[in-house]
Image (cartoon, rainbow over all chains, first blue to last red; front, side, top):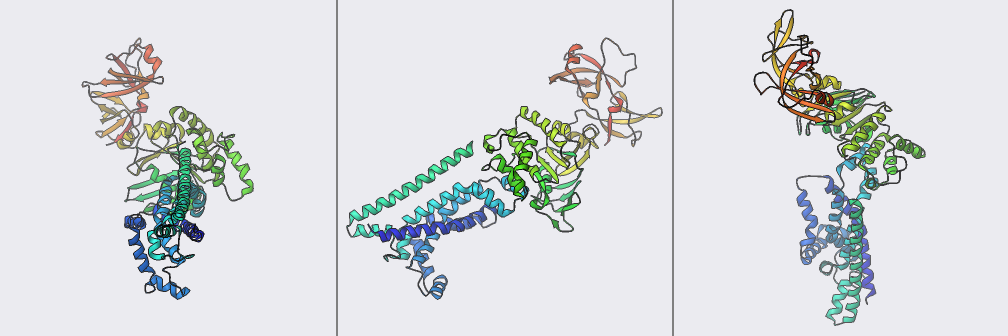
Length: 223
Length: 359
């Protein structure tokens, strides 16, 4: 069992999931409120990581993180380190590929709030911020929980993109899924099995939590 | 006092002028899609018209020329939405507390008073989904009043409840309104509801206000035939005024009818006229007319319907069957006179209830 890879995987998944809370919420809120001409295109861009082969996404991210590119160059000039093949680069990539898993559930739950509820809050004297925190956020909570759990478990399980832009640096970019692959190719089946079982258990627990929570919520909503 | 003038061409046409005094209930009536709710949303600040002025208690909430546009939060409106729009994740008490002013030390006392005012004491800890439609409406009213609003807006507040509850809520609203000293605007498409609850009616059609006045005026003395059709006047006919001695009489087919109010009309003028079905009186059959009856007329009963103690008759009068006059009479009168379809009866059209309208 590669505990170092386990630690990298957990840190990456946790950081990605926490970063996606404000980022995903801001994007979902903006999309839920606006109806501009290019909305379909923006939604498509956000959803793209769902349908794109991980190698294709990984390739573009790698190009974007190259020291000669704008983003990669900026990172080098600020930190003196390369963005590609670093934990920060992996974190950035995880935010991109887990974005649809965060935005979609948040968007659906924000869109399901009847406009009159929001208007009733304004007519009750609540500012737009207060309306968001006291009314919209609590009502969108099931969607937010789903988004967090899905982006956490998806980041934990991602393989292709991680391999493309993170490589396999122990303690830095070597995640559990990479470690499983390594174990298999070097015929260490026992190690691969224990790590796979850990990922399986985490995935099962998180998804069961989401389904149970959502079913409970929809039962309350139907009353 | 609330004063509203709104003009708009797009996306929907608006040409609205209405006033509502403090303590007055003004019903905005019209068919679905007439623009009633749009007017209410403009008053609440949820929508802005292209042009107009909205002022309440001396405060200007909206003025397109002076570029004044206050937000709903700044306007102090109490709004009851059609489906009540209660916050589903909050208890009854918290729904009300959220709308109360910032001084939290008074919240418990104020919310208790409001709950008592709308007869909801004891249900503080319930969630909206645990309440009946009538209870939800009461919470919505209490929440609207929590802000101590300068105007109370009710958007079809009875449409989401059943008929039995509705009647109960009419009574409650009637009691509550006596305690309120603010303008109240009630949007409804139900004329009976409007006439029962409101001090004045404002008829709106295709975004334009057509007439504002007391229920009696609007329902029985509409300004023109278009309004008469909007308020579902059941007897609307055409005729011509002719000079008869020193007075003007209404010639309607072969009948010459006395009309009490002919001011503003002249001989020879073609007019529309209307008469409430309750102002058509049945003559007793045992006492034959000796010519002293007011505007006597004979007609054949071609339809007869009874509902809640009122019998409505459709009479064919004149030579053709195409002219139908409706009359309402108490059910016991219809029974006592043994009225039957196909019979010919004699009735009077009350001269002072006949209302003339220019063509």
